[in-house]
Image 1 (cartoon, one colour):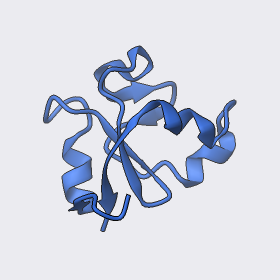
Image 2 (cartoon, helix red, strand yellow; image 1 turned 135 degrees about the horizontal axis):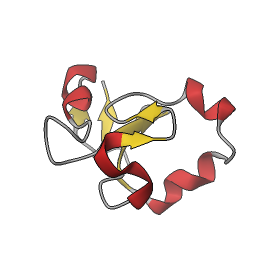
Image 3 (cartoon, rainbow, N blue to C red; image 1 turned 60 degrees about the horizontal axis):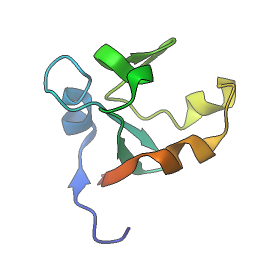
Amino acid sequence: MTDLPVFTRSQLALRNGQDKPQIWVAYKGIIYDVTESRLWRNGKHYEHWAGQDLTEELADAPHTAVVFEKFVAVGKLG
């Protein structure tokens, strides 16, 4: 994953399911494309919003970080 492009928090924020067609979230510095997930439709997943770093919010989730293995890593948060 060292050859992934680096995106700023501002660039990540645009991939929120509203401003651009992509829906991205970050976890531990890696950005994942969750566009195809029906659980992220319109950029919202329960009380969480796309286009953000969800590292700290994962502690409140009913699942573990293993869930990110289902998604393609598209970049690093810089």
